[in-house]
Length: 281
Length: 144
Length: 125
Ligand code: HEM
Ligand code: HEM
Image (cartoon, rainbow over all chains, first blue to last red; front, side, top):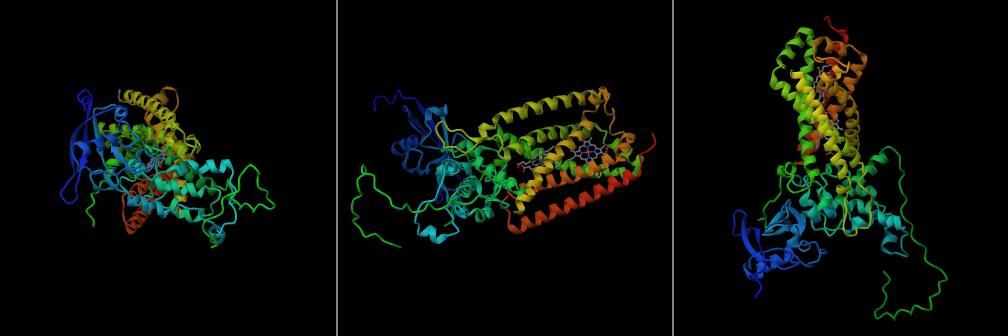
């Protein structure tokens, strides 16, 4: 490239660790020419292509959807893909693996502990009538407001940035954590769900919402605007209000009855004939 | 296979605010002051217990604690109390989900509950500073 | 839920403490200012003052309530922090037990002191 000499460069200071070769992690520096709009992830790719092919990290979609490339960038957990180098306003970019997770190699954290906690809060709709749930005959009623109650928390991409920022997670391996508590709340408040009692065991346990002290950093670092701190405080408030009998238990959404005597709108063409046989489980 | 490297921040994660906002420092100070007041309080129960021995016993105890070190220590307890109390009132409000907004459909630019209650944090700092200054003035004149 | 109930008391006791300890710290640390305004005494830890307060039923009740709520609040706070240290279930149980024991013991002692001093009906200047 002829214009690469003129391009401004930044120094990437990357934490390296190879479990089979290194006893302890160390920092390695690379200088990277920055082009307009270049993200931290692109900077790492440039290093891998031009300087050091042994550098390891994890990424996939490059557009803030998959949640793979969470890293500790200039002292704050961020997605490498949606942070432009120029927006960091620094000519030194420190890139480390997400704190509070074990390091597999270089910049790759082990998110297994996050997924375990996520599973532990039963992040799916629970219905008392499980037969109806598995053999549905219609959809559940849900109003727009009922959707708004949880839709924000459903935006979670499980990148782990909130846990990396959480001071309680810095010492506790039992704390259920902002991500999973938020998911517990997301399903508990869903008007279609009847599993509040089952999830309360996790949500209000001695490692649940009360180990959150609103340091607020989870919500500040969330790349999807999920706001875990809000969900956790809402869960605390709900328990508080319930305990003083101010609010009654909500009834779960009904199943919409099948529509009878329906007539097809003439403007909508009929669906094509199925190419496989319809299974009736 | 267990050659993973532990990367948990430990107690540094409690105490170090790092590049996070003021809320994180408020969190660390709230913990420190809470523990400090608790330690003082437990000693305090035994010191004020000296009253059982009557007037002389109490006066002897107070004469002992009249040394400048203890006066300064008491003033530190006062400062810790002011911060813990004022910030604690904010936490009571905020942890019961008041003043931190409602769930909504996220749209750019994202907002969050931490930033929505930021004015409270600023108010806490101003109020705590005013009370501390008042206490400091009192302490200064008491010494004279 | 048990943890919920403990936390509610943590919060409710905080609200009680704000008023009672606010008044306590006011008399003890704003003494010079309050005294110059004609309220309170210049030396609140002087024995006459101390024993006069202790002989009043209002102070007796206020101190016992403050003692109880501050102990619960502070010890729950301590337990809360210790529970964030990845300890095993049995250690956590022990911590909970020790906190409860310390709380009851200190509450008992403080209440005993308050009642004994209340019965002294003040001292002569
Ligand atoms: C003056 C009124 C007080 C108020 C409004 C207050 C408020 C609070 C609140 C709301 C919390 C919970 C914070 C959280 O969830 O992180 C808390 C924690 C705590 N408080 Fe207080 N408090 C007061 C006085 C005291 C006193 C007198 C003591 C000591 C005896 C104390 C010791 C603690 C401790 C040790 C914690 C735990 C800190 C933590 O977990 O981060 N507080 N306080
Ligand atoms: C640092 C400044 C403080 C000073 C100078 C101070 C002084 C005193 C004095 C002189 C007494 C004896 C009773 C009286 O005179 O009326 C007393 C009692 C008491 N104080 Fe304090 N105090 C301070 C801070 C605190 C704090 C931070 C707490 C709570 C966490 C507290 C809780 C109590 C309680 C519960 C009693 C009654 C004890 C009993 O009767 O057994 N004090 N204090």
